[in-house]
Length: 151
Image (spheres, one colour):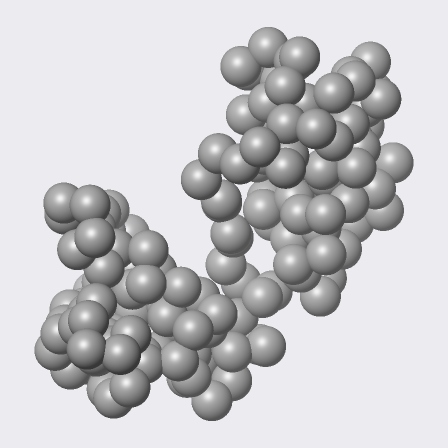
C-alpha cells in the first residue's frame, strides 16, 4: 500500500533583504512518517515552518500540505495544522483561560471554550496565571487548542 504525500516542499527560498534565510529547500513527507527540521541558530528553521503553515510567503518554490497549496490557500490550512509557539513571556502573563482563547483564535473550527477546558480537565486551573502552573498543566493547556479539531 502506497502512503500518500502529506507535505511536499519544492525549491523553496526566502530572503530578508540580502540575508538568504532559506535557499532551494526541497523535501517530501509521507503519511505516518516522523520528521524534524534541525539546524543551527539562524539557519531558517522558523522561517521554513512559517511558510509550511502559510504564515509567510516564500520568494519562490511551491509548498503543498495535505494537498493544500500553502501559499495560495493558506487560510484552509488552519483547520488541519497546529501552531505551537516557542515560549513567550506574553503567555506567562495571561490566565490559562486567556491563553486558550488566544490560541483558539488561530483556528476557524473551534470547540466551545468551556467544553475544551473540561475535556482536558483544566477547570481548576483556568483562572490561574500560566507561569505559575506546573509544567504538565502548561503542556496540557498548550496542546488543547491544537488537538480540538481531532476530538
